Structures are given as structure tokens and as C-alpha cells.
Length: 90
Image 1 (cartoon, rainbow, N blue to C red):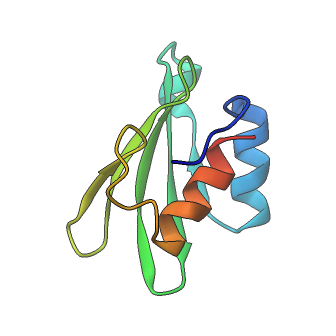
Image 2: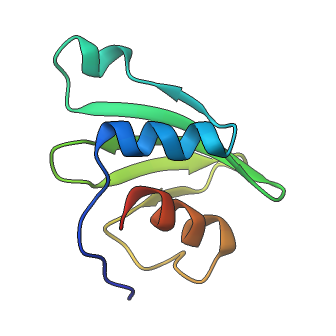
Image 3: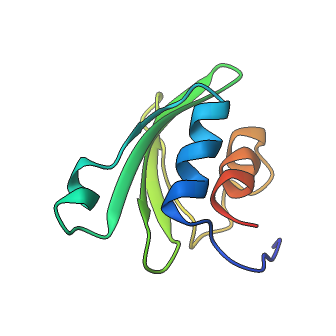
């Protein structure tokens, strides 16, 4: 499994999403929650991700119903998951 130095801050994550033209929402974070969410698109795969700003973990579901989490290695060889890791971590 790939390792990283740290997870991105909310501002860094927001900038990454903007650069990729992904929808980013921090409305619950602004109300005091630890989570933000974003909609991603990588090739033909799209999905929704919930990202925890406190610990850097994320989870979500892609368009075919497959669920994923940053805590598991099941999807680490998939291009869409590699992209999510690159967006969430440094």
C-alpha cells in the first residue's frame, strides 16, 4: 500500500477539486462538522466522497454502487482510487 506524509487541508482539497472541476461542498464543515464531500469523475467512473478533515480518512460510493474507504486496499490498483489518494494526501 502506498504511504503519504499527511492529508490535505480543507483549502488544499478544495483547490484540488476546483482544478479538476469536481463539485465540492463544505456546508456541514462550516456548521462545525469534520466532514466535507465532493463528487469526482475519473474516466468513466464517478462517485461521491466524504472526507474527514480531522483524520484524513474518506469513504464513498462510485456510480455502479461499489463502496470504498481509504482504510482498505481493495481498490488501490484502480485509476479512480489512485486519483482519490493523490487528491486527499500529500
